[in-house]
Image 1: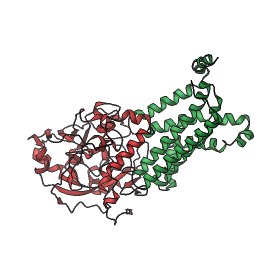
Image 2: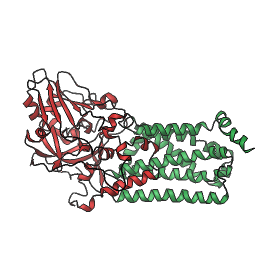
Image 3: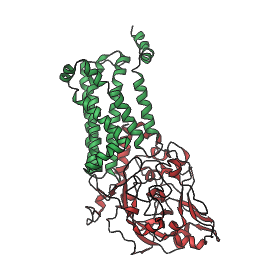
Image 4: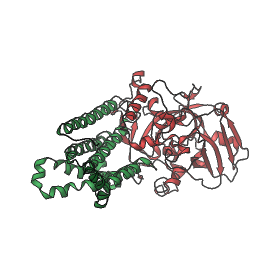
Length: 333
Length: 208
């Protein structure tokens, strides 16, 4: 695998753009009217109401005690935290990559309730505190590959999903797992307006086969970079499936339902020709509009800070290949 | 009272066009190199230069309706400069893609142009814009004679290709390319006689 140029350079404060400068830049451009006319239309209230003389209140994350899991350490250089927390697809807060960071800071995560039900013998409900103290929190460094052909390397904090599912005792009828994101239009401008939310029917839903969900790699994440999740990354709890395209890793989960039939997933509903149920990272199966053979790894730094590298089957997690040995991966993409 | 266009104001306008375009280009590249364009400066720069090309193309197409509407043909004098800046932005857009995104993987570029419809369309538009830029000097206009106008009418199909490229490049429903498509159709509609009579004869009457 290609090494990033920045492997050995420690990140310093100087590498991080000050937030006020970054916000000011957007504001200057907007005031000059050079941002496309449509961008102004799609800008939700919270960011246009932003004032020059003070910052919007920021969502508060906190340090999260954890143990490093030495089985999951990527040899790749870790993406800078500033990039991983400012470049997100979370259409509930707008379709632009920086919209979630701009618009999600007011998300209420405490109280929270995560329900596990459906084909289980013991339905569960985890409240906010239970998300952090029901299971040992471990750190795992995973490669994260977006279907848009960019990728990052992220140190997640969380627990494997199978621990949670085993607690709920799936019945013999359980074959699939359905996930659902929070639906709260008053805090999620993309759910309030189709123009902001990319035309998606909310709530966002995703699904896995039960054996995929029980795989040791499949993680329920409650934090990254040693801290609890910020809202733009899916606070307070999200799924991380490292061998699948990023859209499978559903954010801000409120419900996990075990089912006997294959559940729907949002991007497949929106564009069945372009996005399947499985969405396994596969360099051999192109997206209809672009190649998936390579990806741009976002590391750190400016215009020359990203590197184009070859995409690996299952994003390099070859241990999951046996799950699909009887499946035609070009048909079930 | 509509602005009266004098030779002096044409010069002033041209200075404004140069300064604005160059200022935007320099600032954005400075920001891109110094990591002030968010997590993916490559994508931000590709998008921004693409929008620059579209905005300037629409401005170019706006010149002749304005000249007609205000009955001041002098406006046409800024059209070539606007067109050339649209081409400049398009060159930057394509170079950013090839240099910073594909990182000079020309085999991938070729594959993209052949296999990815939105890139095929974008690249075709780029070829047309190139031929228009190359033939834009007055000397070329004289050499080509009547064929020059025919060639430069290709700006209309090119603008349609550009908007199609924009619409196809977004992942889901996005109002912005649709809005641009509507603006372009509005601009193109002023090229039809029927619309011209409706739109421009009133102001003609007022002038008399």
